[in-house]
Every structure is written in C-alpha cells, then in structure tokens.
Image (cartoon, rainbow over all chains, first blue to last red; front, side, top):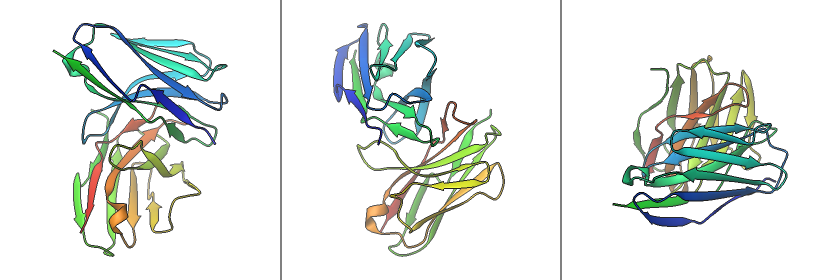
Length: 111
Length: 111
C-alpha cells in the first residue's frame, strides 16, 4: 500500500524566508501528485497538481517538483508571508482513483 | 463561482441516531469522494463514486454508506454514529484522476 511521508512535521520561519517542504512516497506508480494547504478547522485548498509526466509546476510564489523515480516531491515557497501559515499536505493519486495523503507539515511564518 | 458545497457545516447528533451529510458540486465532475479527517490527522478516504460506480475502501466500516442520486449530489449516511465517528467529513470532486477540489467540510459532533 502507498505510504506518503512529509518532513518536517512542523516548521517555523521568519517572514521573507524561502523554504522547502518535502514529500516522499513509496510506490512510484502514481498518476498525479497534488499539494494542498489547510487552515485550522477548514477544508483543503488545492495549490498545485503535477501530472506524472511532468517534473514541476509553478503558481505565483509556489513551485512544486516531482521526481517519480526516487519517490519525492518538494514544495518551494518563496518570500514567505504570515498568511502562508497553515498545514501543507501532499497527496498522490493512485490507480484506484484514490488519494493517499501525507502526514502534513505545519508551517508558521513569524512576522 | 463553481464550487463544492457541503451542508451543514456543523452537525451535532446523538449516539446511535442516524445522520446524513450532503455534498453538491457545480463543477460537473464525474468523480465524487468522501473523506474522514480526525484532529491532527491526514484525511482518510472512505469511498468514492466514479460516475455511477461506487468504490468502497476496504477498511471503511459498514456503518458508513453513500448515495449519489445524480452527478451533482452525493450523500454520506452514518447509520449509527459512535463517539469515534466524531470528525471533519470532507467531500471532494475531480474530473477522472485529475485535480481534486474539496468542499469546506462538515464537522460532526456525537453526544
């Protein structure tokens, strides 16, 4: 069964710093990988989707990369802001059309 | 705006009293999902509909059922809620295996 791990579990950075969140998965036979953010008590907001044939996707200050062969993805956030504080979840889409979620990284950006 | 809507946002039910949660979407996506998320945990897929085909996860308790009367609506029925079923329930939609869009969630409390 697919297992998705995110490191670190929590991260605190001062405002303005660039940062990288890591995601690893055990089964490289994936269709897509999706990054989400979740604010406390709220639903999930989709940030980026990387299809299995792609290496990276960019949206504004966010850049996500995918290395299927090594089972890794990273989410790069440039010039972090206090509004970026949230839990970030990565999820891989498997053959049975389900999402396997990582454990999440709780990010705090300190003003 | 096209979106995924969940009602109610907060639901309180008594131990053993059946409850139904509702999800609707205006995205015309063919796949709809139900996830359960407990505090500080990643969302866990309960089941999904791919068009009209129902796909149950192997470890989803029989206490949880779902209905999809048409493309736009999907319901989650909990036949006899226990205290352990208190959680956030998230509905999501996608076009085939592509990007999943989540609703705001329904927080279920069992008293």
